Image (cartoon, rainbow, N blue to C red; front, side, top):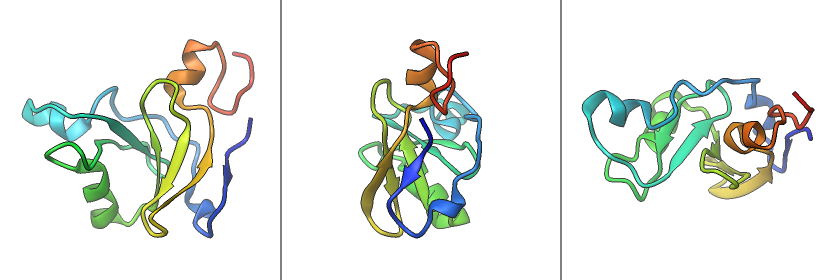
Length: 108
């Protein structure tokens, strides 16, 4: 399954690998998070805005990468920070690996 983005920022999507299996910045400081988001431009994994550190949206504000995907098992939505909206769906790396599929939905 290919990623389909319903906003003008779809060109920001790259073939990425997550930089951590948890919030990279929280792991570095020994802190906790609520939910995880992965940047679809560089693969940075950050914590959501319900987490006290809000590293995922901080990453957007710092580097300007507009699209993240939930990095939670079985959540496939994609969020655009610029449009402040859900703009697509695609199998996450966590979901795809558990199902024996690659990120693009091909059998591995």
